[in-house]
Amino acid sequence: MPRFLMASMSCLVFAACQTQLGDGTAPAQSDSVEVISDRVTTLSDGTRQVEYPGSASDYTIVHNLNDTFSITKPDGSTDIVADIDGIWFRDEAKWHPIDAVASPAIVTGITDGDDRIRGTNEDDVIDGLGGNDVVVGSAGSDTIYLGDGNDQIDYIGFAADYAFVRDAEGTVQVTKPNGGIDSLIGVEGVWFIDEAQWYAVEAITTSMEVTPATDGNDIISGTSGDDLINGLGGEDVVYESAGNDIINLGDGYDQMDFKGALADYIFTQNDDGSLMVTKPDGGVDILTGVDGFWFTQGETWISAEDFIPNAS
Image 1 (cartoon, one colour):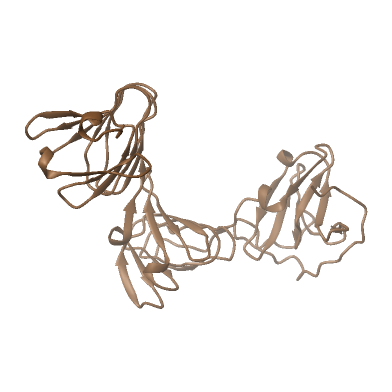
Image 2: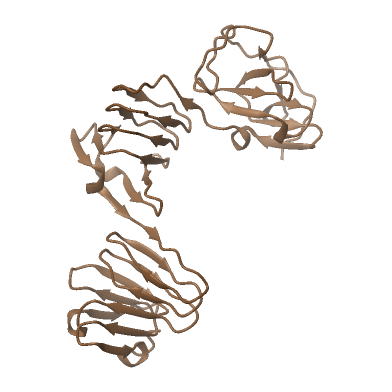
C-alpha cells in the first residue's frame, strides 16, 4: 500500500483555472479555487499522490469531465489536480486510491428540449430531462436517466456485442464490449452504429430477476423474463412462469407448481443433480432443492424422489 513519502516534486501544466468542476460549471479564477501542481509527489514506485490533513470524510472529491479532480476542503475552498493515483490523509494515516474516493462527473448542459449528449471516458451520470434525447455511448460505466419523450442511446458495434438485462428495479444493465456496464432508465430505443440498425429496448432486453424471498415460508411468482429465484429457508412454493428460469430452493419442504398436466413437461436429471424442465412453451427451467411437483391440470402431486430418483 503506498504511503506518504518525501519524493521529487512533479509539476503539472494547467490552462489557468478554466476547468470543469463536477457540476459542469467553469469557475472564474478566484481565491476559492486553486489549481495545484507543486504539492503532487511521485513516490519511488511511480505512484503520484497529494497529501491533506484530516480524513477522507472531511473532503468532497469529484472526477471532472476533463479528467481532473476537484477536491473541496473543509474550509470550502477547492483544489483542482490532475494525473494522481491517490491521496494520503495525515490524521487518518491512510492512503486512498483516487478512484475510490472520487464521485463521478455529472454531464451537464442538458435542456428540456431535444439534446444530443456525449459522455466522457469516465463513469458519467447523465440526466436527460425532457425532450427527445440521444445519448452517444462512451467508455466507463455510466448511469443514464432519460425522461419524457422518445429517448435513444447510440452504441458503436453490433447488438450481438452487448448484453441487455433488466434488473429487479426495472433498470436495464448494459454490459459493453470493453467490460463497462451502463445503467439505463427511461430509454426507448438503441441505435447500433456499425450495424446501422435500431432496436426497441424491450426487444433486446432479458429479465434476470432475483425474486424476493425470506427464510420463512414463501409463495414466489416469477416474471415473463429469465428469472433467478433463490428460495432461502422455509417451506417455499414457486409458481411456473415464462422464460428460462434458474430456481434454487433451500431447507424445508419446497414445491414447484406447474400450470399444465404432467404429460406436458419433459424432465431430465443433469449430472450435477439438478433438474432440467422443458415447458410447453419451449422455455427451460433448471431446478435444485425441489421436493415435490404440483400439476394444476389433473391436480396431480408427485414427489421428486419418486418421479426422478435422487432428484432433490
